[in-house]
Image (cartoon, rainbow, N blue to C red; front, side, top):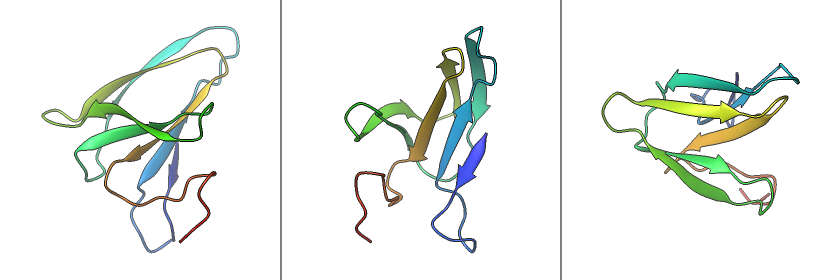
Length: 88
């Protein structure tokens, strides 16, 4: 699990989760402690952020990972520069 923020002084607004096992798929259950209501995933094919899950209630999400896969998520409503968007 990696956490990302725009600067060291800020709280993380995004995270990446990785399956280190390249032979078997895996599923992780995460409790998201970052503020925000919705979780978005970065679509590697389109380069766009897409809606993934609501963080209402328990703020818990299940994430399935293919063998050796990694997935990038962010909290909706928090501005984060994507690889496709280099503007401030």
